[in-house]
Image (cartoon, rainbow, N blue to C red; front, side, top):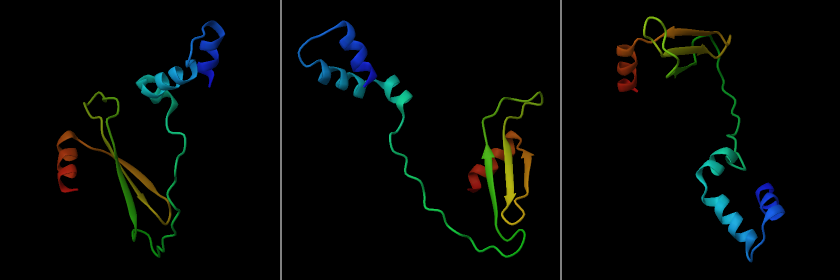
Length: 102
């Protein structure tokens, strides 16, 4: 542990290791920087898709930096067969309607 090494270079007291470990466990900025140690990934699945527009995916990207027109949301639609993607501006009223439906 780098933090323990740095502390031990300049200081010593009884239970220094457990104190440093405890401090690192409860320190929110340390935990945010460190992240999760083990990431579990979802199992890949095969999809049987036979024709274009038989299976599509969509996602709403928000919030993005606001444009000169005041928009900051994008709807992205992708067709699984040709991997064709298109992006559309979502006006604020459209976004709230979409979120209510789903």
